[in-house]
Length: 209
Image (cartoon, rainbow, N blue to C red; front, top):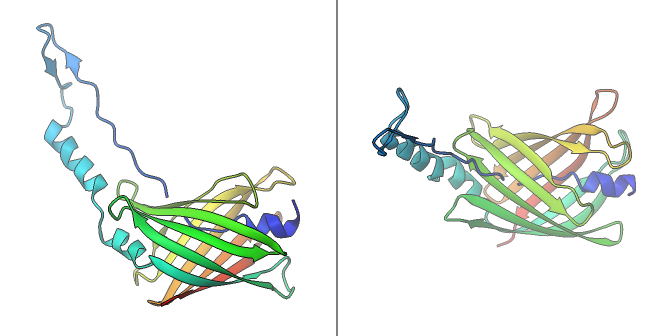
């Protein structure tokens, strides 16, 4: 895989759900089920599961990105170089009663069609955003987690990718800034072997009305 295609394949977006498990109830000598001493009540578990499963304000924040978007993508191969420019389209929709957003991305990179899909959600249990991303420029799955700033306009996420050439893990970071309801700028950064951070991609999304 060329350096160009490897950099394209680390792009953002995407989500993993939190799972809550119920403890097994012990059997008493009489055959009736009873919770272990000191265990939380069934009502407490039911309440916790309800809270974990209920969409909230941060899911509504994700829903603001639903719709059709035009994407302008700039990609840097090395620090100081001029970026390569390409364009794409994104169609986003909320699924599972507003719990997750699915983004379908299509573009043309280096004369070849690119197709990608991300799923992003907010995990009420872990109290963080989570996303997964796959595309036709590779066979891996990118996973990132992060948080929104106090303004509610900037979501920063971090994750790890595996370099297909060296097979070494590399840190990656994305910063998505909502400049207006119809314009979002996403910057992508990767940590180089010497520890420095390089901005390798920027996408500017403009809502299609």
